[in-house]
Image (cartoon, rainbow, N blue to C red):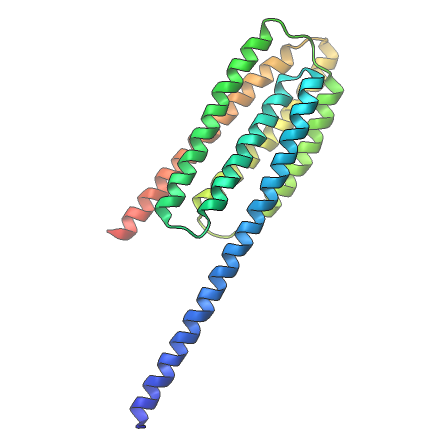
Length: 223
């Protein structure tokens, strides 16, 4: 074998090793992303089940709304799990589905708030505050998990938006519970229910905007 042939063979072998290493790193990254999404998915399912139970018992629209929000989050995390490692166009479609799910939740919650406004009793303030405090702590756990991901994945951005919205909602529920105890009225709970619906709708709008930007970036790379 000549010197030139030997050099070319070594270079080719080196490129194959680098390619294999890159593929291994990519597979490990995707596996890590899936683990993160599975954790936040399970946490949100648990929050949903507990929130519906406490919300019905405490007659709190805000707590039930937060639980439905967790259900929507869990749906989005499931969609995001499907999108991990897939083509950019599939990720964009998954993010769009997430955004419309959240907007649909906002509309359903607004209807429920109006229904309870015309005939609901005052909720149990301490139960609202306790459930919201637990949820807020779990949201911090989810945000820490999501921050382990590095990159521009639109579905992880959607997940972070969802969880950040949840944190704001739960802090507001703590305040609403205190006002319910003070006033002995369901008005703070009803008002917060409308606020939760507005936050959910805005979160859906942000996710759709992120999906649009991701689609534009993908188109620009193809051009």
